[in-house]
Length: 305
Image 1 (cartoon, rainbow, N blue to C red):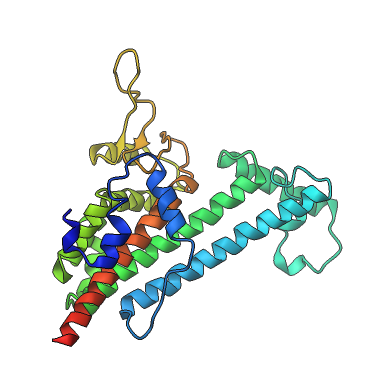
Image 2 (image 1 turned 90 degrees about the vertical axis):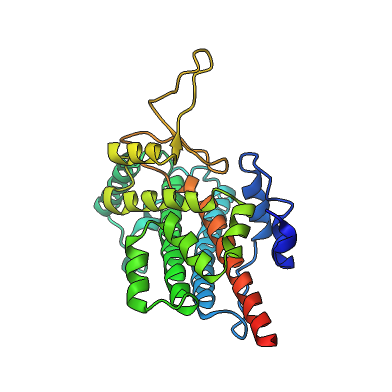
């Protein structure tokens, strides 16, 4: 990527981190860069971006609230002498909200809740109540942001690529995302994909993997099927480790084939979205930011002619 051709705001943001390929280092840098909400300026933002940014900020504020509230409660219980809150959360926290003002909490109700929590954790291979809850929070975050991304791509097809709403909706539903995203951005300005690929060449490919993971969670509780496993291997989305002594692949499991996402995937085991959500959230945010920045600069340049 010749960064001298990119808008200065993007060159300053990405040039120094574009070649960072150490596991998790790029994610740590991006997390540091993205502690604040997505900026919104209704006077200069595109309609597509304004909707995406408001949706993105709303889900992240909700996620932050939940995680902070959980941490505050864990700290409060620790001060009170209960060191096991993260492992075994009191059943009161799982009651139906309509019952929270009801002081009557029978042993039978407590037992039913405890059994439901235990059964759910066992099914999902979690030992801690806290880990189970955070995983479900990340699932909601992941699926929501994926929907926001799809809606953004469909919206800019209408707003900037002159597509009819019906055709844009059909393309969003039927085209693989690794084809739809470059195709849409190239119609608007090829520089968008150049900057995305310069920043992280595997970003759109990772979105393709995430779409398969999203569908797996929506249709099979996130449990890896033989078809998902083989399709991802065939599409180069998963790869095998190699045994040190023999050099042969360890075919009993696989890993996502991306330097920024390390997670063991096995047939029959559920994919924990906590391992996938962070890189997806960060890359999704950057891709939309890159797109909007170039669209905005083009609009300003056109208005100044």
